[in-house]
Image (cartoon, rainbow, N blue to C red; front, top):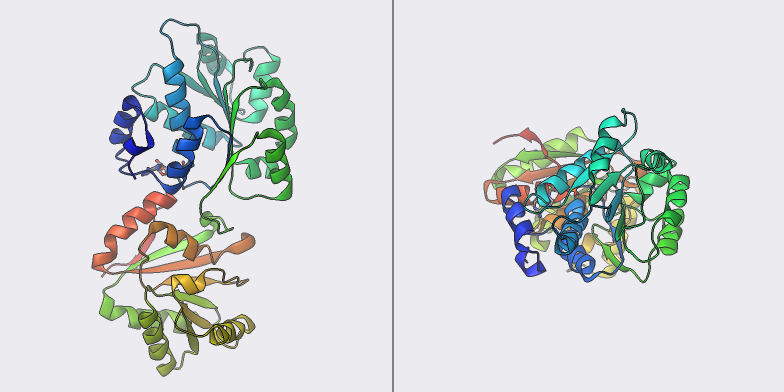
Length: 373
Ligand code: AMP
């Protein structure tokens, strides 16, 4: 899939070339067509998935078509986000993606003098990025009106809830026009957020990436550049050092999983392999042993690991890199669940290096290199 195939218009495509984005991320692939179609969207995605572009691109595209030169500017899109840092980041994205359009955008947030913000608002903007408190403030002072909003984006709704902004949002909602498009993003869906989304979205399309519940940010990710023949020794060294941890090792193939299990068992590291060639009973037993702590290490293929729900998994090791960057996020999401910290180690040989680039692109995070071959 390319950005062109998503029917993105020329000025934005040009801006994306500048950013050196080659292909859309999964959330972009799914969300952009929905947002361009005008429907409401419920996006379950965390930071690092490319969600900002997923809402910014359609908004810019739609407003750019609407833009008549010389027309008075009023705020047509509002992006509400919980923190000052996110607000600034989102504004930067709009700056980049709207570079070849005539649209104006600005950002307002609390904790700083409002003068420069109100100066820019007075000149007229099409797109406003705001944190809730300062927005309410500037509305009360009549620097902002929300009557002309066509696109409303609520970003990081779950964090809004954590930070105590729900009340502010509930105050803001009635100030928005009834007829508008709403794009609602949240990394998780606690009940209060699900209810809020229901109350403000009209017949939304739900788009979800990385259904793993944990936030990638809580996982310590380390990268080992190691050639294939040395991987088993590295694995043994690490497992011996981390004696008290339960570890899930990912192998790309069933054969590979069996082989790793044989090598580890020979070295006295109790482990079991689970994959599609093993009977359901054997898989279940292996899992029970792992959960009870009888075996400390389990080696799994991606398919077998799907649906594995192991509480307190402390470490994931990618013995091989997966074929898709998204699989990496699923794999490491097995650790660091429910706010626990977790560690994900990745063994990368020379011919797997390209995948690291894709992974870093998808997660928006750089992997910590621990060992260079
Ligand atoms: P976000 O989840 O919106 O915070 O984006 C995370 C990171 O991914 C940011 O640094 C973006 O610049 C980057 N990014 C977004 N979309 C793409 C893409 N299609 N290709 C490469 N990088 C991207």
